[in-house]
Image 1: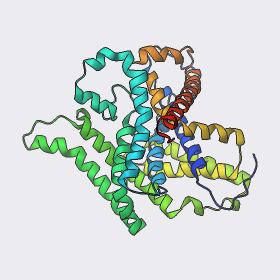
Image 2: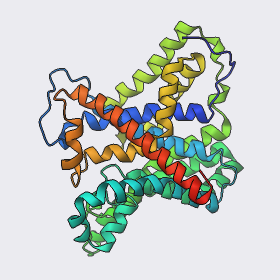
Image 3: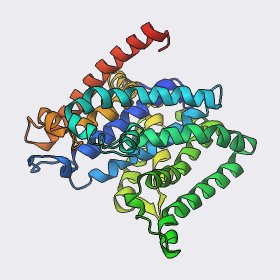
Image 4: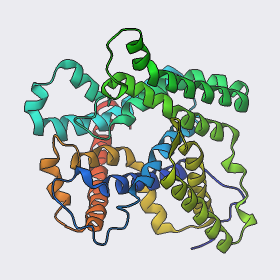
Length: 358
């Protein structure tokens, strides 16, 4: 490891890819060590994370934070920009749906009603892709952020706090809508069974983290950190603690009255990652994380094939060639990365050839 020559933290696109790379590793650890979605029993005798895999759900907070953080650097904060980026997200998701999922469960697709299919195409229903919630959250984010960004930019800290409070109150209100309507005599299913309402609740629940990400980028909080103040050993200790402590705290408590404590945990974990890779080169590890970050969206949707009930009968045997869950997790990461890299390479080439835009 070699010390960086930067005086302050640099949080550019490559650093963002590193953070995404760590987050997608967390996500794969979360899903690989959760044994409820395997069709065969695995050997857990030497499992590394079976008792604490749920702490890696912090990846959700990290990705939500990065949505707001990245939006702060967009040149045109308008709906045209939003539509462009929504399309960029839908391309990999729909490729996974149309090419890798629906052909293997065509009878179920043909027997589904139009509303159900539309819900699946935008992540509102996760039947055909277990981990598709990010699709509707990102669409929601791109719709509200043009307005929210202007409001926050006027008086950043005050207006960010106002937006966070409003988002949390709206989340609570949305959650209580079915109960309220039932009290008034209307028969409404619980929010868990109401997919559009549940999607809206999840969006409002994660909005505070997204707003915090925008505020951090707008104010340049990370860039104000002077990395030369600590020695290499001190930096390792501090970064280790900033990574370890939030995960330990998350093990015991992840939310308070639906307020996601990733609001506090995610920025600290991100800070640990960013400071570490600003202080140390770690060239090989850095390159791996950057590449994983660049294909993280593809990895997100592709690895769902191994656990989505509709198609896992076909895909899951590819990763359960090992019985040890640690090997299953490692092999899933490797396979998912290379498959995602290949798919993205083909899609990028076709996009450039057809419309001239990567």
